Image (cartoon, rainbow, N blue to C red; front, side):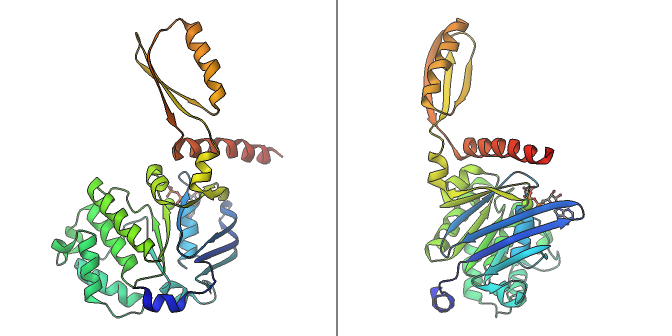
Length: 304
Ligand SMILES: Nc1ncnc2c1ncn2[C@@H]1O[C@H](COP(=O)(O)OP(=O)(O)OP(=O)(O)O)[C@@H](O)[C@H]1O
Ligand SMILES: [Mg+2]
């Protein structure tokens, strides 16, 4: 699928967001976002509920207007040329919205039309296969389970073979088996040169898939780095202690030297240890730390 896309590619980043702000009345959902996602990246956009991830994605997709700032997709200004920008981008939305009277195949064909391309039945067959929907191709949308509907959403985002694919919680409510095959498929698309932007609350998925990650909190980017660098920022991890008498405990530490006072505290408590294990820090630990740190900074500025 590289052919036509390769000719569209140039030195432009896949997504460039500058000084982006979005207010809903008094609420500042996005508060000055600057972000560049390079072509070919697998990029994670993480943050707690209400951080602004979907607001940012809907502006990138041209579905919502920013209050301030600019967005480009593959060098195309989304506000100035929304139709051209839209053809470069496939978005798997967080919310399930469908016309219940169309079949799965018709839904995909109609979506191709929406993007201004002829439906390609070979490609639609491949999508149905990868999304394990071949058996349901002629079923009406209303007859699908929630997880199957989400798979169709993924298919809709890919039907026009966009350069940039944005997935807003694509695996919410999706069973383990499909989750794995979905990641294999998305990984293949990334290897073929597609840029992937992923939002998820499953941080182990982000850790496994994303080369770079931005963390959002209250409409601001509070961390942006390579996944490996984010993880190595925290040398710490988790000490798993199994006591001879009263069960187990998971104790988080930030620095290995913190282990000494932790062990001393256990000794002073008089408990005896049956076994000890150390786990490295996960993206979840890093995420929680960054959210806490930036929380105190945010509340400090609020009181000024
Ligand atoms: N149409 C809207 N009108 C008013 N407020 C909105 C609207 N859409 C979003 N918001 C608010 O903007 C903030 C950011 O919401 P957004 O949906 O972007 O968060 P999110 O990071 O995607 O969260 P989640 O992880 O729950 O999906 C929230 O406080 C939300 O209530
Ligand atoms: Mg959201």
